[in-house]
Length: 451
Image 1 (tube, rainbow, N blue to C red):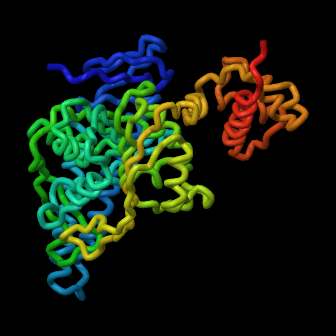
Image 2: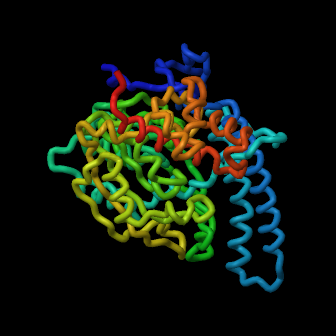
Image 3: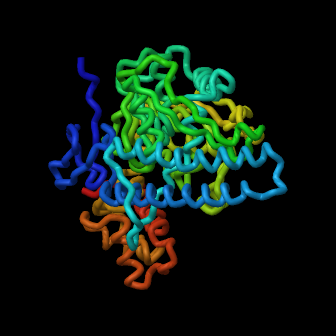
């Protein structure tokens, strides 16, 4: 029996996208082609550039591992080292090239091979979330961080709750999605979405019943013998046929409006969007009326990524969710261990905000239109029927309203206003245009209908 239909949207033009088969999907509206990698659709707006960054990332990773091995082995010859310290360095120096080869083989199986750096190509940090693989598939039962997360999420859900069609944004390895799907005996699609390739390539193998071996390399090992440990990566859980892995942008998910009954954001809202207030309308757009937003994660922001005004506290974030047209039914804010590897002397403890919120029926009017919530800024802004006195109130509003002819998106409008000298070319133009468009929308909605 086929899984229920998923309403995909083209990442490039947002038109409906019909599910394809390997080696690629094709958009009938814009002719965009989206490859599959290791059997996983790559539904990002510029897939060729993404693949090139992954190839360059492999090359950079391989060179870094070779250089690290040379430094470690050179340090091992220090005559003053204790015997166990020398043994630790020798073992680590031998493990690093094997570690690099294991990763290269894994990507090679998916058709991704290392490529030298080219001008203008940013290499992906492919090992950024490497520790998640060991946490999710190796550490238990000695250290189990997945089951407590599942239990906390279940504790805030209504008693009659069903997942239905589910999307998990920033899914990491997809292990949380996998376990929740098993708890609910999920037959409808549960989609794990992420942009990082390594965890998904591994999870795809595990879903096929395969296993593999990878090194765990803790930065602060408890004992000298813990500096490098070859681990068997496998799943102790039954497979879940309804789990779909998709490479996609969590801020512009490749799905049509109202595609899901549940959207889950684990360890996402503080890390991925620059302003979580702009995420809420995207989630509301994806949900069917009465659908559920389930969040689980801390509010720990990177100051280089998130402005001070947008580093929301738990109470501020819940208020933000309510203002976006959601009813928060239950929440908790409790501390729990994070990344506590049994091989490491270092771990974190983070206070995690978990909540269930339902999209209120009739709340569509609270949801920003797609041309505002789409972070690409490419969707055309329709003509806005704002009163003529708008120009007298604030001249730029009238100028912007005149530029909105149904063909220009936020990005092009920003460029035009910068060229006209109405906005400064300091990186804030798009944000200013979005703010002005929100004002124009409020004015238009508040104005009497013209006969």
